[in-house]
Length: 291
Ligand code: GUN
Image 1 (cartoon, rainbow, N blue to C red):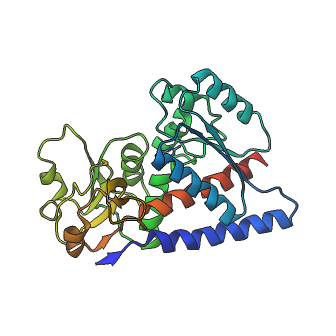
Image 2: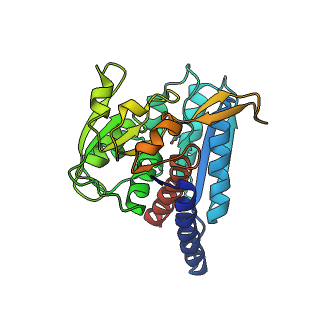
């Protein structure tokens, strides 16, 4: 079993980005800039946004985080997005999800300029992704593809089972893995909450992408020998023995599944850091396109 080390892989990619930024700056360019909007005080969202801000510092980007209280109106949020859309000094804009229930998430995403939508959530960018056109690939699927590529995992003709059909992970990764190319050329099955006999599907999978948000959902008897398992789950489970009062648990019962795998991602240190570095990649790309 080989660990797909997202921490190490993302550090290597970060170094490449940082080098490119310094070269751009040396040639008279300004630094890429990412703006993140956070509404409310969800603990996990706060951590994600802080990690994104820290990554910006690591690679030499400018960044700003705009924090709004949870009762901020949709109108105020949309006005801020409009303002940032029109700011030529900003390359990438992300609104951390989930948003409070009184705000229409789809409307918010739709108001982000597609050229600054480095999360790749806007329907225009999702459409391009579906067609295999160059676009901002949303960060988690982009990170998974980069990890598979980094470890030279042969995906051609393989049967990939994706657990979860979210707009952020399940749908785009299913599409990417079914497209022509490497990684890609997979036969993809998407499973979700209404799928019958999920284990019959997962047992046939050469590659499993677990993105359903149920801690330790994927058990040893659901995985065939030699499978590649990518764990996207990252749930905070209360744990009084930890200083923070919780630990992070993936969608895979790692302890029992890992011995059967040819490759598997750990949680934490697998997909998470790859997601963040992919956002940095998209922001750099946005900056080059804006130049
Ligand atoms: N919430 C969970 N994942 C993401 C992400 O990749 N981007 C944003 N904006 N919100 C998220």
